[in-house]
Amino acid sequence: MNKFLSTCLLISTICALKTFSSSPKDYVVFPKIYFQKDSARIYLTFQLEDQYKNAQITIMKKQLLSNKWESVETLPSGSLSYFDTLPIQKAVEYGIICSNDTASAFGYYLVGEMNEIEPYYGNVLILVDSTIEKEIQTELEQFQNDLLNDGWYSEVRKVPRSEVFNQIEIRKIKRIVNSYKKRWKEKFKVLLLVGRVPVPYTGNYSFDGHTDHFGAFPSDLFYIIDDSLLSDDIEYNITASEERNHNVPFDGKPDQTTITNEISIAIGRIDFFNLTVFLKGEVELLKNYFKKNHEFRFGKTDKNFNCIIDDGFGTQSDEIFSANAYMNFYALCDTIIEDKLFDNVSQKYFRFSYACNSGSYTSIWSSLNSEQCANFEIKSTFLFLLGSYCWDWDNENNLLRSALASSPSVLINAWIGRPFWHMHHFGFGFPIAKSFLITANNLNLYPSTGKYGYKGMHLELLGDPTIRIFYPPPVQKTEFEIDSNGNVVLFWEKPQELDDLIGYQINKKEIGNENFNQIAFLPKEFITFVDQNTQKGRWNYQIKAIYNRRNKFGGYSAPSLGQSIEVLVK
Image (cartoon, rainbow, N blue to C red; front, side):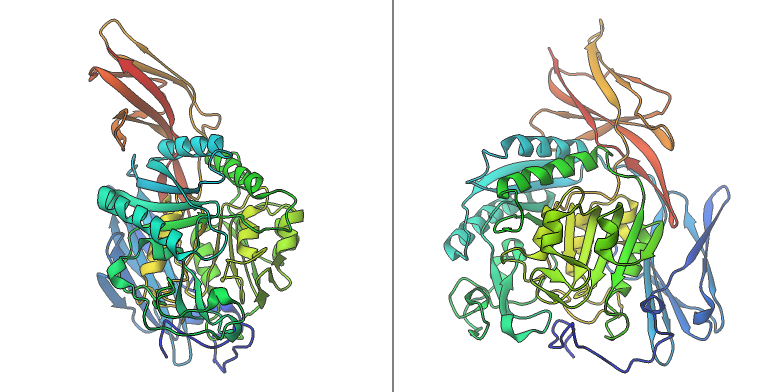
């Protein structure tokens, strides 16, 4: 069957799969990692569970940036451990597949140490609904400042608003995006749509198998796909119950259901149009989102790394939907709790949460609905859902957009399972944009029980793609002076939390330039820095507190949000 497409229903797909047992967890490999350091190497041992002792176990390994597995080893029969060596300060990606005659289990993990600290991630284009830009100007300026201090350069462009499909306005916006692709080239990393930016539609399919909305579907990926790869003269389908899902030749809705090339720009949307279950209006919900975002970046969120999985499908489908959550959450979280989603996230904080069950545009049955998002606190930063209809998110009170609009925590929401998402890199400090791109480009690199939706144009990240999994507290009270020798002297106070603090990264750029460059790294005992390489001009200095963040697969150097100082050197 075509891996891209499926016509089976989420709510009714049953298969006679023989399993290791009856639990979705048995389709995921949960390795235990042991580190032993000597003067030059880190030794790794994968310890696997007894249930895999009669399976064929394949260990794959690759470098972080590679798009293919560089080594593949099959363990001897009966072996449940694997011994490997890594250079110190090096993280390597592992894939583990355990297979027998009836089923397979999968796991993908980043393992090792990552101590490089990137002062610059790339450029972000923020397209803002022109009718609300002035009303959220303060929040946008603060957001841009936060992006700058997190390592991003950003620009804001106002674009037309459209509450219904409008191919003319969509083409205008695509021309703007194309101009930035030409101007920024490989620096263009993130496209963020804020407000009711016109929604493109494309394709002829239904990723949940329901025929009443089989046809064109919302797709912000359209904005970054090369025009040469799109056509609009083939598909003809007017069977869907809503006209927005119709697709006919030359209607401005491309024919393409899948991505035919690799993409390098992550896309996010923050759009609270037509969420009538909320008492707050669209502008207030946008203001609230940016407030949540700002507070999270300053480390003001609960520090726990717990997660919750609310699985309504189990092993009914051979896709084993919740295996996607178990695989990711084992790589990202300290504790996995299995319970009802709303009953828990309305009471206490979970960094990650997931639910799957039969669904509607506004609900996942017995797990979460739009009215709950409007009327109760939803205490989870990264919320992932799977159910029928809600992936088709351009409708009144849509669940995915309602969850993003909730208070006080949700910053990211996505429909995961068709396809499976792969987020193990997120646990080592990469922005979630990386997880989006890996998922969008994955076809065969990460095998799993997931079967459908790969390379689909429906892939959507609701929220801010630049966000990281964790932000430690920043330095305080930054000041500067210019001494008698003309040197710039920076002063700061230590962060409020000193546990795991390892030092400070000092970055610098000339005002008007896009990216910071690191000019020094100081041990944690320092609270001053003298820049003896000063030149005339306007300079932006940035101080980041750097922490050693540990997880079960190693560790990485986690930077706080930077604190910036503008200095005029005459």
